[in-house]
Image (tube, rainbow, N blue to C red; front, side, top):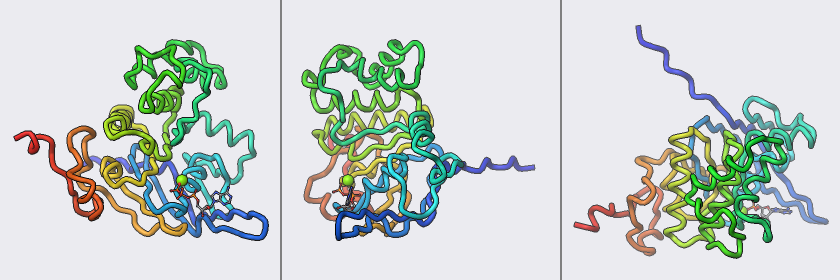
Length: 268
Ligand SMILES: Nc1ncnc2c1ncn2[C@@H]1O[C@H](COP(=O)(O)OP(=O)(O)OP(=O)(O)O)[C@@H](O)[C@H]1O
Ligand SMILES: [Mg+2]
């Protein structure tokens, strides 16, 4: 008899989510009707033009903000029914956030920044956990540096270490490579792919860059607050194995037709 295939577990489930921002006289419908299921262990990218609702969607997924209407189940829990305190508890336990601008404290060393979420969560052994999170992003030699003493890529890696130190099941990242040069961006993608493959973390990143998106398993495209495409990536790129051919070919449309050359081929 055939063994039954385990059902992939839905970890984030949005049903007809809308979000309207009211500012004085003007209402902006940032999300119109978004329904979406993400399974445990998926690596997903969200793309779309500026103003299409990507950050709004990520904030709702991360329980940083409540939708105007619709239902959102996070690990089976109906987020709309939670009060602010319960929402914060869910966020701290289950979700790690990485922001485009890193959001680091200016006068705080790398290791202390990474320790902070553990202090809030009243965890013991904080220093050793913070150290090993920084080691996992290649910053063992930068524990006591301040943000101003680190490069942009290193600061982003501190932010990633801070997001993962409490071992959340879900990592959400808004343009995590947006402020980085391309080799630092690839380092960040490598770290994300490792966390996804080795630790089974569910990862959702917002990106403008089709080359970055092709490193993930699935691309969701937003336009004017609606999902207009949701497709699996055939053969996601292994971070570091492929170079962009040129900025020009990227303009063609990096998503449907891969416009990349394998590094081995370049070397031949
Ligand atoms: N706090 C807010 N108050 C009022 N309107 C907002 C607010 N946040 C976002 N908006 C509006 O909602 C829409 C979606 O914004 P959002 O930040 O989600 O876009 P985005 O896709 O992340 O864009 P970008 O690529 O520029 O970051 C935009 O039209 C924006 O002006
Ligand atoms: Mg945004």
